[in-house]
Length: 460
Image 1 (tube, rainbow, N blue to C red):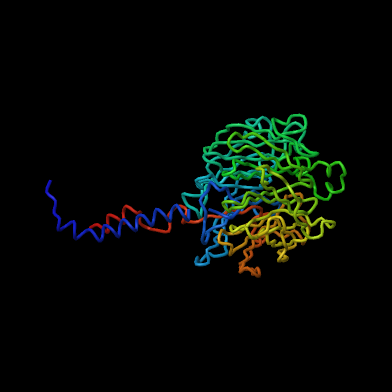
Image 2: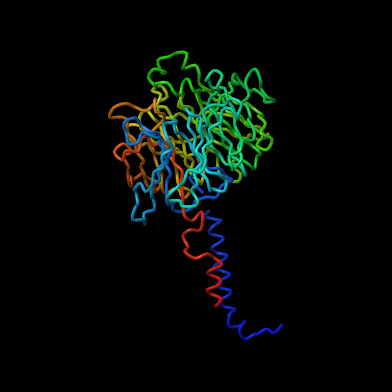
């Protein structure tokens, strides 16, 4: 084979530039390839500016088409559509839209309905600005063996772990975790331990109630944690009626369960009285702890591994005045593990706690967001916080206090400054609940040329 060395020498600088560019593009697609800080560690992260926020929204009687929908908002400040709704996708009827989560490859967003038990799967990678509904799972209850109320949809490698809130026997709080493949096929149900069936777990205190709510993992410790809330008969009841029903108020969870992540085996039942809701685990390589807050007792709890390698639970701070029951709802941990944001529904406030010492959180900020506030999502770089308003259709406030919104605030380490607000009732969208972030960088869409096309061009 004859080789023209002169031609090779001439092409060599272009070839090196092409290789460097190709490598950079692939690294960018992987490295900037997740999401707000409450996402699964198995997912890639949006470490810079997100392009979109997907808001899973409850249909509202008398507002727009009255259907649950996925609302896409452009949040890139360099976009001409910044702060505007760029797409809505209705799913038919009102299902009590609540939480959503991406698959580990971030190609699909799974969103559940607490009332109808349907799970809606959206393609968010083909066109991040315009998600497409690709599948509806409508046999969740029968396939799972009776789990009701799909809540958290959480990414594991090739799997989605779904927490339930209830069951189809008594519509109470006893429930389980339900495992699916990324393609939407049922795999297994992992029932939460109860006094009558601990399923191999150790009961450490007064409770083993079998209730469920959220799930998070610390893979390096082979640990998975689930929290507890209440059943269908409570969360579908009018809030005022429930508060005045002594029996209903007894039907709330009081536990966090430690699981063996790989074996899906419950190991330990920890007492965390007062309905522990969201769990947020630290990101630092040696930070073996997670936080949760209790809705009914307004406390921050630390779930931590002690020096003997045993997991423990400890209440470490009060949120507001617990006697006034501000009702802590969503929380968000910043990626440096130094700040925990805590929302309280009743007073519409967000609070920032310095958690650099996780055993001694200190409140450093308190700010009114609206008449009511529920969800909070922090960007990975810690510069932006998004807030939404709706808790549950029957629990939201009435009249003028029933504000429904998405709000973006910038955070400079000292103060929150509002950047934009979208009125979901005025825009005929409904009740804004949970947010998930999207970005073109996840799919290398910021480049018009493919890496190999660029290599071909530069080598000519």
